[in-house]
Image (cartoon, rainbow, N blue to C red; front, top):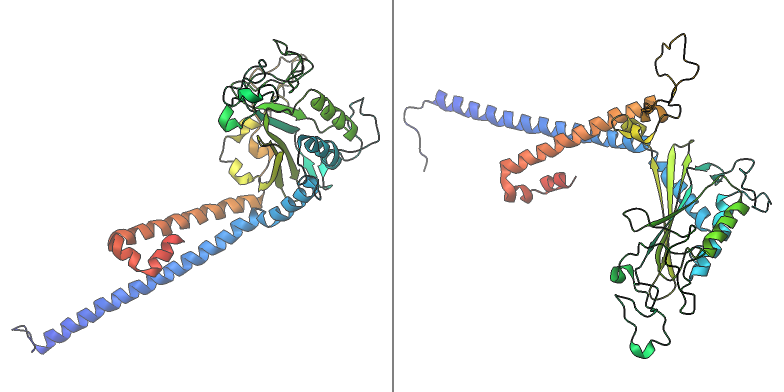
Length: 385
């Protein structure tokens, strides 16, 4: 049974049907154009994503990190560490062999080695010194030996067990000086500890629980071994040591990549040493330096130099030091190339398109409601992207 509106002629009906068809056609055209727009946006997004990846040097990061890992860790020398003596053997042996030049000297005179020193794998230049960092567990005072606040030795074993050495989580961090020529040996038969530390004892960093020691790289392998021997004689690692980290960083100018190595040695409260290592390779991202305050990290090496391009024709023969030298901008220390500028422009477009697509998804979420939005597979896929 059909219902007709009174007063409508056939022409009116035809016009109404034509208007309805036009509206539907406009909707279809709008949906089609929206689909084309989304396809173009995703293609641009993919192209920019590829450009960003290619300009960041990520394709060379893994080969560099894997070769660095194999060179520094060796073929079982690092992974084979079981006890503290093995830690010293690795550092004094394989580690020094790969990071310092052996010139056959006795190491008594610390001289800068000849040739290309400070390189790993012949191409990667070490930057700065090698840093050693230690964290220790607190076990109470020196005497009596079996008095550990967080871990009590049963009375029946007080004669046989000198002290309890728990984990840092149980005993907390130690921050008192240790080691040196007047330090305590970790044995119940050692002399009573000196009440004040010696000049060669190890001290924690101010307001921190870390103990730091640095090994310069501008020396021969023999000199480095003598320093490590002195470190060992001063009891740098003892029964309270719970974590030892060794840091070094290299830079390869050919690929403009840094690689930071972190060697971790963890003497356990159960005995033995656990080891692991991380190698992180990254790009300086020079174009981002222009947008940051990284210039504070690069002080002016010539603070007395006049930055004025038109200097005084009668300069002072005895200039006074500038108390507030102008720091060198990071962009001058690591100048950006045209490729870097193009990468910055590509990244800006990349994040702009990502923001637009995200806002578009939020608008659809609001229009369709939470429940209906997630009923559509393509909307959910769009949200995940």
